[in-house]
Image (cartoon, rainbow, N blue to C red):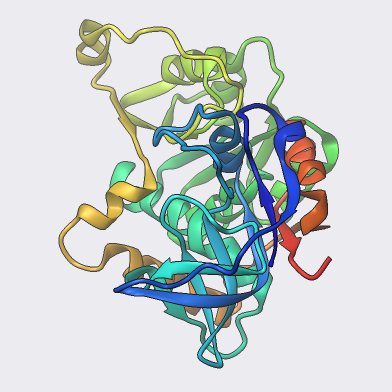
Length: 318
């Protein structure tokens, strides 16, 4: 089968098209004929071995696929990679049948990035009606869903940040009340101004560095910042516990694999609710571009440039 393999860790240049034997499903697993592959920012960390879960060489990256399994359309979350290929093996427990009317783009937009937005707002931030929500990287895969969910769930004011006029226009189209430049030198002041002079209640942050530091400083009493990535590849400053106490601030982290350790089927519940919102016209996936499998390098270069919007896909037939 055609696949993309990493034999040495590094940037997009290490993604190499190869021919590999078809994978074989083991106990509790299913074999999927892949139609489209989802590209996530975590894949770039996986390729350079800077992800939370260490990578092992040789590696076929990719954590999500949509395709057919025994003739039925499914979307699947993989275990440790293997997605950048014509065929993939997935745990049966994280392989989900697709409802009618859910296309490949939507399925892959909701599987990882949609459920991430859902968990951040429901479990980390415990969003209440009327609260203000800041969505950093609002034109990205998680951000585009988070903006829509926050509005659908009654947020009082949704503040989007993005790096270009086109991205900010997209965030406004998706329901954000205001969109500001993510390159603002004083993000604290910019967020408070965008919230009509008030400190903000919730921040969803996957940037890191000074963006995180200044967002924490913009939180209202009992404000919550949910941290779920570090696209800027720069760590925030250490947080002083006395400052958290002094401002009644909550700072939390979220890594999606931990959701599967929660009691009950939280992931399945999130995915079902997201698909229902799509079918009811309250949520939509944003296409960020489709690349040939053989050009996975190009997809990673585009993603790391932070110039993309929405969901990126790979086509295993090309």
